[in-house]
Length: 597
Image (tube, rainbow, N blue to C red):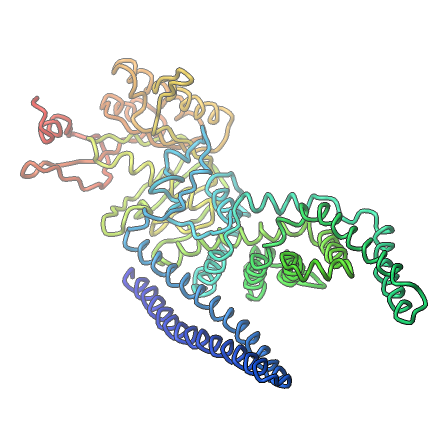
């Protein structure tokens, strides 16, 4: 199954490499054609000048037009080359993900880490070797934000179901998803860029008093009339000259007023063109899933599409970009070009400015859903879980950790069918206790995002996830690791007492205190939680806690992991078994690392 997916990406990579080689030959040809055209223009112009043959300049004109056409077509070829290079990179990343080499991906989502979040740090949602790093295919900051939100925030049954249908539709659309990612790689709007766009949208129109602007437009017309009158010797030269000087002065003053407002727009033309292509790529697909249709409708208005509106803004930006030319300033002094451009920009902003940020958000939603769809495409043996309304429960068959390579992954069956069900997991060091808790937690995060899970079957109700696994002290706040753990446990207890449907994952409970207090405290906490409408796991080395199964009337059950030492080597099978662990390995591990015991 995995080899089939690898073959798809390998074939895609080879196909794009072959196409890239063909296009690069075409690119080299256009470099030659452009060079020959320039030489022809220079040669004809020089020969006509030296021989004083003015009609030779007419021969130059078609070659100038030819050069302009070649430049435009060459630009398209260069864009095609860049697109193919990105598609090749995308397929290389996909192969790296399948082979377990994805931990080198640059996007780790560290900026989305939330202190004191109920589960994100313990379940490796962000950071190095995290779930975000594994699945993220977003390039725009809105895409990364949307994906992070799906992995972090509470949701509803309706939202989960709608995302599942959207992801199921997007999963087989490999070419479409890869093209979305490739176009995003060209655009790559960051948070600061979006902030500039938002500030720009919020700015007041530059031409606030339009009455005076219309009067300014009369000035070039008046100057032209006086020039005509001067040519007929009706008025003296000084009259149109005075009006021309006035126009130049007004243009210079206007530069001070206008330049600052347009400085962020001058170089935006190409970026907006790319954004237009990205929007058009989404607009042109025929979606069926209600969520995708709803998102797409935000881009397609009755009168015009978002891609067309952005392209219109790109044309305005291209005109603004001409302000870097000396010729433009000469023409601007004559006919006040800036006024026309600013009026067009203000009009665009008033009509579509508020929609611009929404369009970025829509692209972000598609990028986030496409990231999760890639997970579904690359793992066809994973399943979409059944998330239902009801009391806390969780059941999964052949449940594995999605971030562990398939060749090394060990799956387990897990079932917590009733509220009050708590599994106490015992086992020696490195036997798989913590990994089991993370496996359950991270698959729940995927389930609630609408993605498939690493299992052959899974059903659960919608619950809040609480963890206490990685506990750190805080010297700045004078908090010890034990006190930090108490705060996490308190958060779980308070949520349970409020009647929230929750699942808790407590690893090595109360490890930071002496064994007597640890066992007494853990017994009290477990018994109290078993009386609430919650389910969860507790891992421990304290075998004394196993007696809770026989003492309690609730659904407290013992499970364990085992290990064996063969030829001075520790062997783990990572299979969850009923009952209490009968093995320990701390002394053996000390001897294996060279510590005399």
